[in-house]
Image (spheres, rainbow, N blue to C red):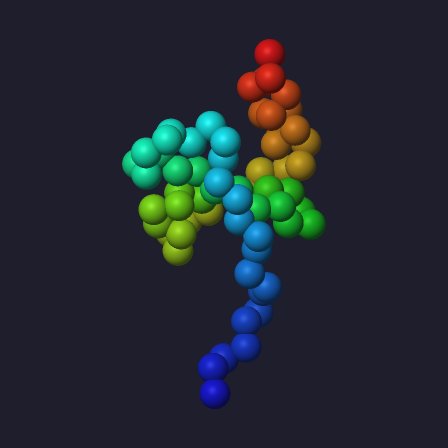
Length: 64
């Protein structure tokens, strides 16, 4: 019997700013405490966690 997951899998999505080729892929997932960010080529590697406020500020800066 497989071990139960302690945390549900997050709904990851690819950044629209990722390159058209497969070498530049950033993915993000919304969680209750903010946003997780990972390299899609290494999904099991370390993830960056940022607050919702930081994420919103980042997105706003890209729209200028």
